[in-house]
Length: 569
Image 1 (cartoon, rainbow, N blue to C red):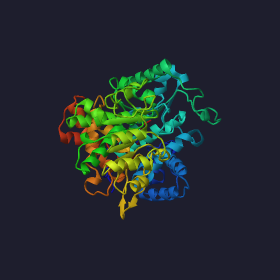
Image 2: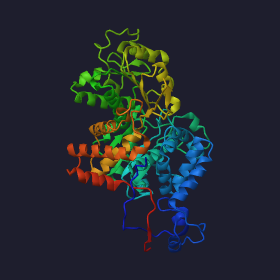
Image 3: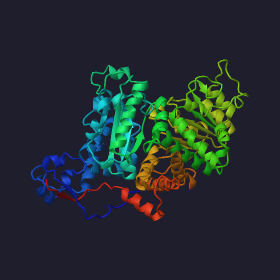
Image 4: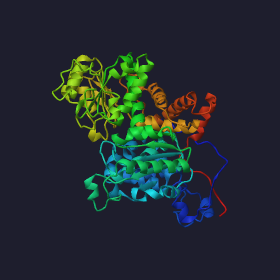
């Protein structure tokens, strides 16, 4: 299904003073071989292109043939990145046409490898690199941004890239990829997006010793220096683009939460690792529980991993359970978080603030057989809690073992299991193993894409708990409504809207999430839910529902060539 709507007719051509190679070098205006003869004469392109004027359909066929000649996913990533750098319309049209095939290439899992090899694959810069040695010049650096009208920024400091850790300047692959998904999935115009890397050094010795490393060769700055650098960045952004939507991405668990809390009231911002992951997980769980004719407030939930993703998931599960009538304490008592030292509970010393929030009470763990150091292992938690839901955000490959899953399945008829860590190499368990160990009874969603699994003569499609079902629509809803802030309640609204589109609700063998081919429809639905919540909360002006729908549709760009008109110099 192709959910990109036909391009709306416009009588307003795009005016440009660019000519010749300058026009061919502009990825937003370049049409390559698709420039008409009239345009070639008008813009000094005669003789610079082969004689035949291609259609977009012909270009798509030619480009896809070249794509298929690549022998590895990294080569395919490089090919698509190069295409994006020279012709954005063709790039987005191609990727949307083959979205299920190409999204894993332009984003997870392949983008993780690309980040690791960034300094060796580098060809052309995108966005802005704000390096610590230039900390006194941040406003000036923002003036060098390649585009004037910026509506969405994705920023990272590269410290916690996916499950791969510190990638330094290589982390730029994440903001670039995320913004590509904003355009691909929600139709946000690429001319309004800006990826930014805060280059504050790296503690990755392999990178520091790499003679080709492109970042600032220095150990990461910490403490007050780091805080002041980020403050200077946020202040400069708010001054230059006061209505921008800022997305924090792949910051370490030590920085992600406080950055979100400090700046969410100062600038329209959110953290996708915390809030986006929480919402897409809540959507999948809500769909699974509805398919089982149960309620979220009746579940016992264990989460392996207690970083920003786990706390983001817990935040939204808590809100959803409270909406079903539980008190906050009752909701938190159903959430059991486990880190590398075992269960998070109030008797443990040195817990970070974001972990204390979901620490189990001493009364809850009184019946547990705690070790001498006060710890309770993951296996012991599974045995004690008998969870109905198991979530993995640990980046520990194979952490969901057959023994643990079998123990869980002994007490639950339909265990819900989400191994969410990505890339694929960090996944806690494969869907095939989980279904095999539970004799097909498990309801599974994963963080990375997996092939369907055949078991008991049934083929089960595996839903990907993919943030691209949430954050692009959230951004679209915020921009279309003019919301001044992004709230957790907006993400819960997005999750509920997404859960209602779950294929499993119509067919038990279908996944918990819609196919990627429907992602534009999903984004419109999510955007409407977010925009209505923004109005309800008083962060956006009140309008009618039809007006909101009109604004959302007006914000969605379609990758098709525009008519060009010469502008006076």
